[in-house]
Length: 383
Image (cartoon, rainbow, N blue to C red; front, side, top):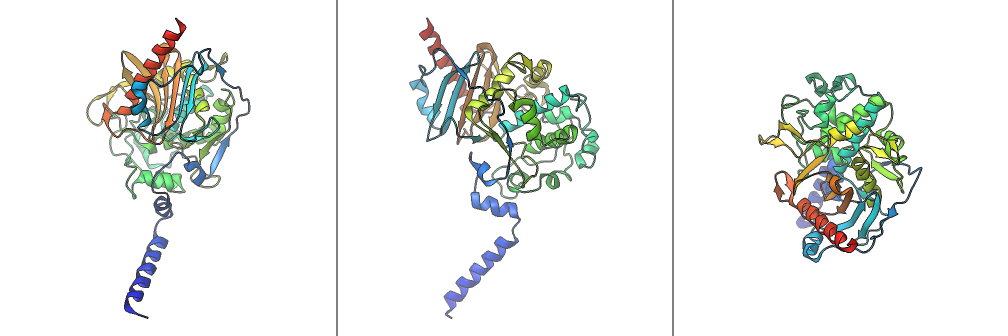
């Protein structure tokens, strides 16, 4: 055997040993490289049944609006797959791109955090959680963070002080371990705090995952099953949703991985717009929804600025004199709620802007302005 061949074989054997000795999450991360909207296909999932589907009604102007030409370049720059507008509880505009359809589901990424917040409200209504000020030690006493007087409110407002590195690109970050790993409880249980609870806003995915553990302990149910019972079966969802798990029959990746269609995502926005009311029934208390969509401006973020852009696991945009609550995912997944217009907008896609203005990805302003222009065009058509 010649020397070059021996070297090649040695290198291949060495690489094989390195791969075998890698943590399983890292092997998975190397295979898939970066997150995508179809990642539910690589995970185990739990199903939320659409047990009482009620199709959206259509507004009289449905199909007559178009994306304004002045916004086309900026809109398509970030690879959209779906755009939905709902007005007065009816479909006003629906459009799909790059082969996506109304029946295709997409990952929510961090929009799932707002879904978890809605479930906390439902659990309070049901009496499973006393109120937002209940200490988390009542539910998960064996977790290290529970030794630091952290409350449900601290988790909802991202002021838990959890010692978590919210880094998506690094192979060895805890967020990567959570996304591609297979034991969220083992990952989170030993983590304590790096700052006093309630003192500073610091957005961390682990904080939402802790809320999911609390919901499981409080309700005695998987959060998917609780969400199906309390929300999905009551808002007329047209298709089953999937919530991705850390392993087969395991724990929901609650902070990231709720998968649904654009139409059904819009229903979640409509539920918030309705202050928790759906078809005359109070699904979640209006008082809680008001808290969920009220900025926690009394709390400073890590830059020392008032947190006027966040409520309970839900973002809030201050724009053109309006306060616009919205759900937000890392690849440009958005559900916007426009209370002044009685409207909801859903945008799904593959990318979002890396440039931020006051902690807000700049593409969000593109969609808000585009919505306003489409709204004005609608007004012109009704005159």
